[in-house]
Length: 293
View (cartoon, rainbow, N blue to C red):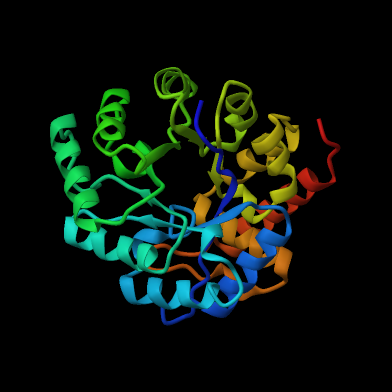
């Protein structure tokens, strides 16, 4: 069994100004709200947070703003880069600030690469960081095009014991999650697809880093901590994924906050069209008024 569980970590959506810089005031307000609403931690600059669009300077400003109110032990940071130097620069912003851990994405530009090649890349990055801890390998082939095999994960956890502590499985493929739980029960296996979260927890999962926690943290917490499913989770996810999900999440945050500035995306992404945003809001409100399963 893993030595600890991450529980519920919100894959925090990132608010941007119209200059494409991070709006650190809204970021801090939203992060504090998520924690107050029962999230255990915040993961910055992941997929939901448009992390691939956030450079080192904005990462530094953002983390500094959050640390004014939030303990570093409650923060993690995504790392999304292809060049090892760039990945290390992103990682060191987090490690130098004492953040709890890293969500480390594979190099996403190069496709059809071997496990040997990926192992060499991850090993180089981790060795260059030097003081990395609580590293979660990020398996999200729908975005990266670079899957992380069960064998590769085993090689990395053996080569970096106590550093590689878990995997975030955002494949949406339950058979892959089952393989990870069976082969790597000593790691924290996190499930990114909230529809599979409760099931994974009942079979030894260690929690989640997920986007739905931006909107429904209390409902998701029961799945992440108690393995209790709720039909509203699947209904909410299915409403969101009928649209490009990053702007969809932001549209719903904007609705909940009554703050249209939350709809701003970092280029090249664009906000949902007004009509789509309205349809999504109506559907999501129906989910909120439904009874728990």
